[in-house]
Amino acid sequence: MNSKLDQILKYIINLFLIVWIGFSIFMFAWFIISSFKSTREIYTSVWGLPKVFRIENYTRVLTDFGLARFLLNSVVTVLTATVLTLALSAPISYVLSKLKFRGSSFITMSFIIGIGIPVQTIFIPLYLMMSKINLTDSLTGLIWLYTVTSLPFTIYLLMGFFKTIPSSLADSAQIDGASAWQSFIKIMLPMARSGILSAGIYIFVMLWKEFELALVFISKEHKQTVSLGLYSLVTKLTYTGDWGGLFASVVLVILPSVVFYILLAKRFIAGLTVGIGKN
Amino acid sequence: MLMESPILNNRYKNFILATTIPVFILYGIFMIFPILQSLYYSLFDWSGFTKNMTFIGLKNYAELGTDNFFLKTVWTSLKYVLYGGVLIIGITLLFTYAITGYKSKRMKDLVQMILFMPNTVSPVALALLWGFVLNTRWGLLNSILQGLGLGFLAQGWLGDDYIFGAALSLLVWIHVGFFIVIYLAGADRIPPSLYEAAEIDGANEWKRFIMITIPLLKDVIETSIVLWTIFAFKIFGYIYAFGAGGCGSDPSPGIRNLSVQLYLTAFGKRTPINRLAYASAMAIILLLLVAILIYLIRKVFKSTEILEY
Image (cartoon, rainbow over all chains, first blue to last red; front, side):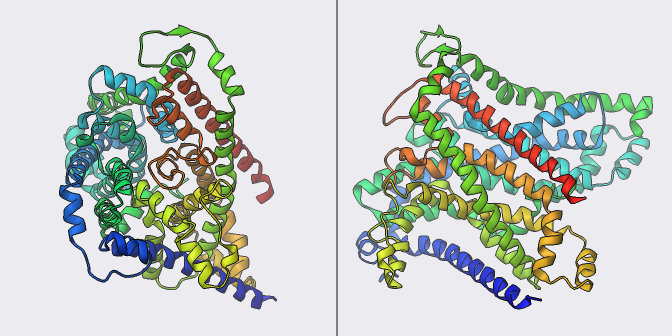
């Protein structure tokens, strides 16, 4: 029939995809290249290569502009929140996916609905609540918020994983007299290890780039996390005209999550798509 | 099965209570209860930062109905839903077509990984990047246009006329990468035998994509439309940091969605409005709009089922 037309169509779509990917790679390369330029070079040839690679852009932003502090705040907050989220989600996900009891579908449903609740609908009451217990401008407060808001999606992901694990082993362990906790910790957890790891990577990457909650709940500069810190740096460095330093900051901020993602991309994507096509 | 045995049932009971109740209570306190609180606050005249709280019933909602700034952000959010939805779902489908045609699994994984990458990056960095790409004087787009001898097409992309398209293009670039992952996972689960049968019947690749892949991806497409609708209303960082003429100013009114306007009304620092109760009414409207849209989308997808079978 008109298979020639189909071929042309296919070429065009593939070309479009190649341009798209080329653009994406170029963007990331450009971030890195610009971070080694002097501000003058960025002005004179914004899309070209630098003459000298200026590593001092990095040392300057880390020390003078407090980026080291933002990085440290993010590491502490995001790692703690990730571990806490997994610890709270794993047992309940197992129970909700494997055991039927009165109220189980209600609880499951309410977590699923939670995935769709935009955080904007609750951050005013949360702000008032947190300021009452002195947890605004506090990393502890941010850890709690990150943990709680990550729960619905994490539980949804982990439930998908537990569903793929056969319960026969845990069942026979129970008949042999193991308690529910024992069979969960000794049998189910090790079998769900890869799923929990995937979920953990996903939470880490998503919280590392989180901006909005940090913006609402943190205002003191020494408590800022990377996205928020970068936002204040952009304002500051645009003002002083230190574009080289600005790009060095961008690279340092995005590097941990991007590297983490590239190294574990397969797991990451497996984690994100576990529920697809199961219904 | 096991639950029916009374002894085991008892043994499970404490386990179930210990694992579910604390997490559920935590979730209720921090995520469900605040929705009710937003509803309650929205009935008052209150800045949020003083003790003066006057009950005014539905007056905040009445005011929202005449607040042109607010109505414009609702309209902009809907524009994101519609234009963004068509572009993102359309491009994602085209890319699904191209990528499922790859023979090499490694190539598939690599392309997918690169497409998703913007989703792992701080929104502030991406908004900054987009400002550089679209800058009038030395931006990438205008430089390329000039290089191709198409300089007459160069525009002030960050001016009021084009700013919405500028923000939309950033969101499309990012979210095609997000949804392609879900679409490819869905396409992966379609049994190859279906394609083989169609091939024997003489259907070419494009036809097979239209007749088999797209109908079987229906659930995935529905999920992606629902998710995008939620995203379009709640996306914040990309738009907030994509301030007019770079960072350091509030985003131009033309690109603000509901959640950006809500933030500015409650907590905005450059031009403080500080009306927490009024912003709470916005939050309730936001939730209602999202719920209604999701309901409608589900309804449309349900009604198309008859056509298929």
